Image 1 (tube, rainbow over the protein chains, first blue to last red):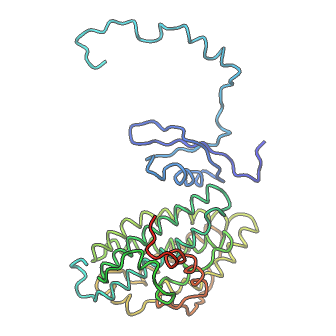
Image 2 (image 1 turned 180 degrees about the vertical axis):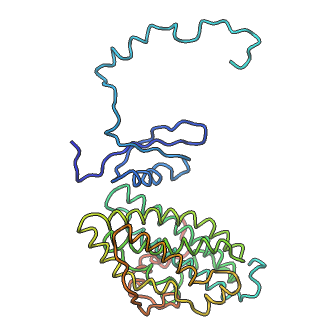
Amino acid sequence: MEDDRQWPLYEVFVRARGGLDHKHVGSLHASDERMAIEHARDLYTRREEGVSIWVGRSKDITASDPGESESLFEPARDKIYRHPTFYDIPPEVKTL
Amino acid sequence: MSAATVGVEASSLFRYVLRLADLSLILGQRLGEWVGHAPALEEDLGLANVALDLIGQARLLFTYAGEIEGRGRDEDAIAFMREHTEYVNPVLAEQPNKDFAQTIVRQVLIDAFQTELYERLAASSDERLAAIAAKSVKETRYHLRYSGGWLIRLGDGTAESHARMQAAIDRLWPYTAELFAEDELDRTMAENGIAPRLDVVQAAWSQRIDALLTEATLVRPGERHYAWFGKHGQHSEHLGYILAEMQHMQRTYPGARW
């Protein structure tokens, strides 16, 4: 249950510069999306950390359950053939 | 002083730049009082950011004023070592914070004024002033976005927030007349292309404020003026308290450094 005397929580994502991905930097409280952008600007980009901001309500994010980690992630552990490490790289290819 | 300002006496330009500087200084100092007391941590930082922008503008302007004056005073000497009647900010800037509604309304009125003024000052015949204005207008546009957002949110909010916002606008409105009351110095600056005419600034300001008030479901008060003239050094009793706090360190430890 959300406490309605508190502003809702938002997650903040900042793009450090053009060409990079938005990265999660933290969260904050705000009464609406516009205020969330302003707060994010004041909290997370005051030292020129970004050129673009995304915000989204924390409650809209669905997280994986740590209790399910075994079945979600461990099956990938022994599938080493999924890493592209079994190819002989032709000597002509320089930038791979 | 840049060549473009020939034709205007240095003492006039000095006084004009000082008015701009004092507006930013005193409003910035006022906003700084919220630090540690704002209604939410995020707002604390938001208000402090605006305050720091304003102090930054004041620093650039005081430094320039010192150079025009040519008596070796730096930004600190001018900012801190003057008497009460030597400050030439409009009286609106020194009005107390009171509740958040009063703070926001004072901010909206001045943010809109600075935005319209700086936009035009950016085309000043005085290159230095034009450069400072061009930098500052980017800040004040954001300030107005921030304060305007709150004006709308609280004006069009609950019955209590609406009543507090309307009370704030009714109380502060008469102080806005001074922003546009043109005197001899304003006229000289306008005639020499250094500053815009204040009636032009007023028309643009008025349009902006009307649009915001309408969206905030607030009523623009009738024209009622106070005979204050902060820009001639006539201040309300509030300025004395601001200066006492602001000047305490400089006067107790003259020339102190970090």
